[in-house]
Image 1 (cartoon, rainbow, N blue to C red):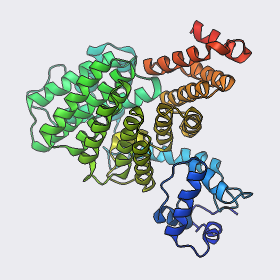
Image 2 (cartoon, rainbow, N blue to C red; image 1 turned 135 degrees about the vertical axis):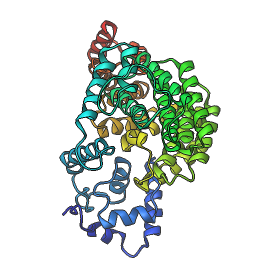
Image 3 (cartoon, rainbow, N blue to C red; image 1 turned 90 degrees about the horizontal axis):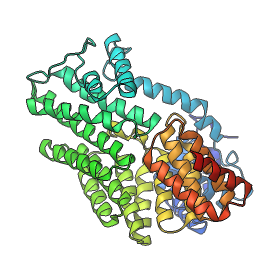
Image 4 (cartoon, one colour; image 1 turned 90 degrees about the vertical axis):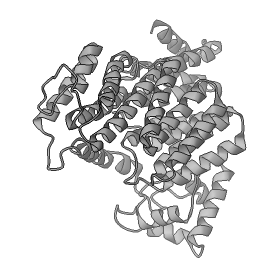
Length: 450
């Protein structure tokens, strides 16, 4: 019987037998290598499984455990069905997390009417208004929800909060709709944020918030440029964020800037720069107490090593990434890392194997990423599915690739991302030799019309 959410996993403990947790973890790692998986199992992970903290393993561990104990199911190993962990319970947990996030600025309870009004105005401005409207909506709203046209001579708490809200709203809209429709509209709020910073603040704590907010806004706008194919603009915005971090001594902002710079360098075909930026980010993040941040930076580094065709260094970085990720969430995890869950980890690992030419292996990870991703994050679902289509096409599975490509076309009705469109175009070119297949032919026709 599967373990309940709060009870020990006794079936799994029995399977360990007389081996110590460390010995059993070593057996798991050896079994993973036998089937070509990468896991960073240690005694702590075994303890989390046996205590019932891990109710269902991720797909990599699932394959390893089923390989170790043939003929058994996950339930036989003491795990809960995946749908109960990833389904309704996960939705309730996510709803609770979103509610907590929304109320963070209002510890006493529900969001104030003025903050709700700000959010509504902001969403409408981004989706329907020009850049001047966005600037007004995001950076000139007082806590009473009124628009104040001229910038104040000295920034106060209201202006700092408006900058922080602009960052959050850009991220939410990007998750839903992609970067292309947002980039130009987000440039004006960024200029306004730095104008507020240049004007100074009424107190040091407010100035610190403005530095952090302006830096995060620069990264967010840089990401919109990055995802919409404006690489030079992205590079400039990321450099601006890094300078802001260095001036204010903000290690968290510095690590974030280096993470995005590593990602951009990889996409621009500069893998060695990607490695160095990721390593610099790791140095900045060491004292922050966030294993998830260290995991992401290790994945950025792995991507750079893969681009350099250094398989050994890539695998070492992937192992570090899994080790840090397995430590779980921490209170020190940055707010911007809400996107980094198991799905993103699978996607980033998929890109590494694709760069190393192992497309079938990359496709397995891309499929897991698409399966794990919450549908709310439409852009990421489209991205992971596009990665799956491309890897399937290169792995010699044209019909499956065409199916995945068709799914991306459906998602692109809602998502605007030059990067995803470019990936899909490359997949279509790869599939042209297979166009006599009815499924491939139908996909190529739909893609040409789109």
